[in-house]
Length: 379
Image: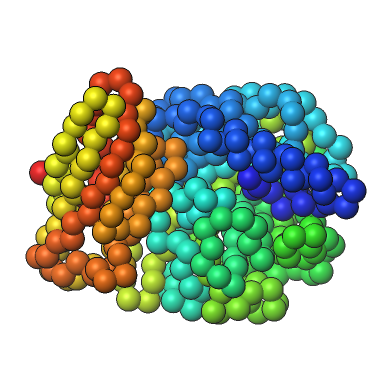
């Protein structure tokens, strides 16, 4: 598990064995941790790599990878607050962590209904917005982390990382060295370039704090392409917003976050539009287990290609097997993609898939169904 551009630099060389050990511990921790309920407001997560889903669209992660000191994030309906941030690390090295919220796929965790990974030359725009809350008495940056890779990978380290530093507090700097300045998306930035031993890093640093902004992520992706750090045939895999704290940091917050990816053949989805899909869920339940058949209906006027149904499992449920669809699960959030022979749902048509799951406690049905980001009517 990794989320910061600095991790590989901090642990490479004679510490290679330690990196492998920590990776195994992280994987075991992720498996053993009970994730917060999806969409839960004011839920506090202190597990090292604990996550929660908000708005049935994004994943909040605690992601304390660079320190053994305690850290907790309090998840809200629209973002998170760093409610505990113990300890400190040297300011000339890697930060303690990267608590953040993201759209896309990060180390096998994919946000519900995400359009990522998506090929760069197929993306018309990737609008995003954020509102940050800053604090005194801490050393940190407030930053976006944007990941690119030659393959549509949903796990592991990507080849190129773009960081956008909205705020820099204390004697810290990006990886590498400053290579100039640039005007991107209507703002002026210091431009830094370097590598951390596992990926290239291109950083844009605001000369003064920016506490909120709406912009197109693709403006920064095109900068990476023009500088030879990515290609148009590469893939955008995730868009993340959070903080890298070196010292303290309690009270830092992402008050709101949004991220959308619009491909050349589609228009942005308006969350307020009436549902263009309907879902029927038919379970056969026994003690501790369930077999479910799910029918996804397209009630819109146009076909839906590369369909992705996202929903939230109740706490205590876990999918063990599925058919007629490819299933990705994380923190109670589930995304099902159509099989190779059924990636399109025609207008007025439907696709059906099924799964088996275990559950503990009282049985409950999943909710929060969305089709390619559009909320569905549950029948």
